Image 1 (tube, helix red, strand yellow):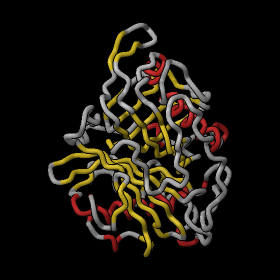
Image 2: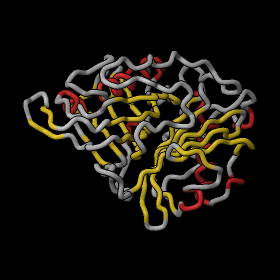
Image 3: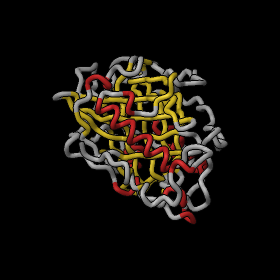
Length: 341
């Protein structure tokens, strides 16, 4: 197994933390959350829930279906290929991992979200994407053995250069608003570097802004149920769950440069996605997504306020206000020293 370590996780050095984890009486800081994620991964690979700090009433959802734990890939995972990228948010008590696994001879990309309260895991959410014989178009998927994360995603941003939680969420939400009914315009103040690249299940899609400016994704009817459940302020990353709906009614259309093209979606279909956005100085510099095809208009059991828009350019719900600290989860100190960064 590559990438599992209790000492260095996603660029956060736990050994360098100034205070032992057990001394954090108020709850779970970044180091605690990321250690919990490592414990979960070890338990998952061992097929042994007893090795993870699971709450007695833990909820487990995999590919948008609520299951008993263990079930699903808890029973079939045979190896973690990695590398594992770990992100954490002490304000919400969420920690997430982007990694890759094998189920016998079947490779797949795996996104994990854990909700931690009082140092116990109360929610587990997986998106696992594999090569499946799904309805057209096939879900894009790359080589799990050759994939590496953009190393900048895990790098801490100097305190003076960090964007606020609201600014990080606004960039992610602007991206989703631009992806929805993409007509060549950039929405919500979203900004990209010329070389900003998006990885979809390990497949590389460069020049994100260029694709948007061409209106390439005009077939996306809605990007709904956007839930910005994790903001890693130290690393400058916002992460969300969302659903991309395709009605299948769009046939031929033209890009903004006049090129004739045809929609690849020929019937109603949705993608469920967990997606992360690295933001530096108010600009999205890197994007990673793990997603799976779902029944049309599927939603997560964790969705609290469903987005019931009919589609088209109806305004999406406003992104959430900055969160207040969850009980038992302390706010980061200025500068983020608590994780030994």
